[in-house]
Length: 121
Length: 255
Image (cartoon, rainbow over all chains, first blue to last red; front, side, top):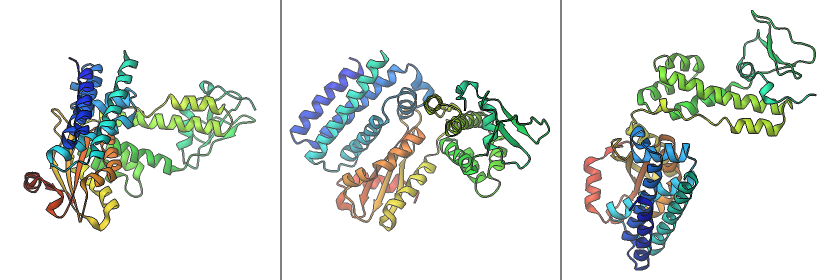
């Protein structure tokens, strides 16, 4: 399965986890969904990843700055990565509101990236 | 007055005119043809009747280009030398001299500078009503700042961390106790810089939202991801003792 359908699956999982009150797990899955969407976008840029070095550099250079993806989407992606670090690595409690907000932000990243991929197709 | 097509105007010469602060040169443009000439230098080109004389733009605009360009340079040594070069009087000369040490950057600078000047030239033409405002704006839109591959280079995570910490200091002032660089960007895979920010008291989630703008700006400018956990001085805000210990053990204090 390629990255975008997996991103949608992760979104569903994140939503279920948030509804079940499992905040940290929901944030983690929300981040995973956004990361998969970004992976799908990077794949679209061909071998650019190798040229640019890392995921962040490739995404920001090739997809956002050159490719025209709305920078506010990349901003949410960065923020989700940070929230995942708070929830997972630092083990800081996540409120239900914050876990739902993370899921909503991940939905926006996945939807906007899917639209971007459609435009490129 | 005839309105010119922007393509008719000698834009290169107009750009040169807009940057020429010498006393001897008097640049002009012929509003009927778009020809740009200069009086009073070795190759004297007298202004025809009806020519419009061109005043140079304030040098602070060109100075801003220097700052913006340096902001895009990732190579730590080049960035530091260029930053030093533009401090004080003689900034433009020192900047250009410094670029001789970095031929790739020099080429990149010319492309960056020329694009910016062309946009200013088009703006000037619209302000002088020599071209239609819409046509000038279309021309400006077609000239975004170029993406400069030459500016890529090894990123200095400590330098980025210090820059972020300056902004955090502006935000938190005396509340800021310490900024620790926990991991340095790994360019083999993910280019990520992780910081731990210690303030007197903090809800890490709320503070994360508060500093989102700062972290995003530095991420976007450097084509990396800068993450930061803001922790209160008391251990109670972070449940993971392991994480706290790791920060203390492995981190490099940048502020």
